[in-house]
Length: 441
Image 1 (cartoon, rainbow, N blue to C red):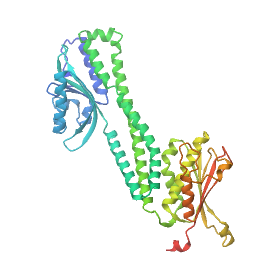
Image 2 (spheres, one colour):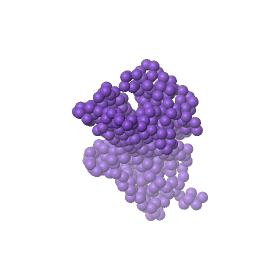
Image 3 (cartoon, one colour):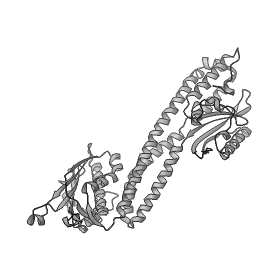
């Protein structure tokens, strides 16, 4: 390590100085965050290997004698210099400061920085030292989430109806729960960062600078210093890996929100249009809309899709019915308390009584959502589609009522079957097959 802190040892260097050099070298070579020591003119006198890599330098030696102005924008360099001058003049550290670093080529990064005074053996301030944790990814995720939320509002405006906004918010809300958990873990990890331990270690070594060799080799607390440095580096690496996992989870959930918003925008633009539709594609879209909640509640989804003709219906209405049925099935599985929570989705042709008396050919398609959840008491089967009827404490009773009405408007029907409490439930959506004349157009 070439720096003012790592100058070539004298021919007869005291044991405590050699040990001091070894401790600092081990720390700077292994700590994953950016660590730096500067003189009173804000010139680098020692840096971590991680900072050198971050600045695209081949070695920490390449930074020695340089300042922030050699790597960052003039404004950032001025802010950093001002902070360091305040620390030198007052002796007060700056802890947990959020900073934006702007590079000469226009790139920027967000870091959480702590800076402290660097003192000599006599206690005089000879510079500063600090540690910076890069949180650019977390900040970008916050911006992406804000964009997704604005897109959510735009989608509801495009739809022009309260049902779309309600549906989107409900589905996104399930994903936001997972986002909130990951964001909380990240925030807790940053608040519990071991950056302060660097300052405590420096204070401990300074306290024993006169007898550092004896302190490290004989004092019980001193003998634990190398172990502490290794533990600090290991903790920082583990913390980085754990936070990166949460960041990945955040990004996946944000992508899911974007997918939900995109699908809702597509369906909202088709309000009032009756057309031939692929039943399987609609069912899969409804599953994707509920994917976050299904995964969070560990509900297994099975599929049994038969080959059927296109249905003739309104895309937005069918999706809203299926999303509602799958969401309700998820709630039923939760309330049922079964270890193996499962929903089975089926698509099959159906021969109505009218068609049976005429052509004998199927004239409807059945889209079935079956769960192994809490089940429905016999007395509720005739009331379940009534306006305002609900068995959930926080339910409003509008979903199934509006779904049944929508099915009727599309010349179809929505029915339910259950063998009673604990036996699960089956909801059956019948929709007409597209007439041959429509398909021929």
